[in-house]
Image (cartoon, rainbow, N blue to C red):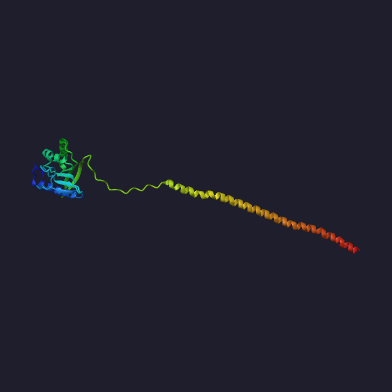
Length: 234
């Protein structure tokens, strides 16, 4: 709630509606406390003079560290006095400062932040689409933390094609080993052929031996014939 400006009822209802929608949005990551309307339940800053922003974000850790401050403005509250009193004070806190303004007030908001020197972590624009409100991120500070992408499974290293080369070379080795086997087979066949030839020569010699004997026996018979003739003459 702005201490300077008293909003019209209609704008105040819209303002509180935006606060409750943002409470549901930030509740996924933070512990959220809100100060809608005239409520002052979540202070920020030193106790003597605390501030009551629209939303206060605390970390979910044990220490409940202050993680962010969210301020929602309407068309009437985007002005120089509001920027100097509240925006500058929220930007000095050790937490992120998110500013939500109507889409029609984006240019004025940027100019005010640049002129006064207010470091806003994020500037969001909201506008109505029928009965629903839409939020669009317009500006983000350079050092603001971005949401981390989902972790991906490490990709498997590609199989090298060179690993298949030894298999191809190994397949060729048996073909090279076949050459000595073929040569040995040829030598064996030549030896067998020579042994066959030698066997045929030995057979021819054996066959020739009886023939020679037969020729020698012939004269013996011829010699015996004249002897018989002389015997008859006697």
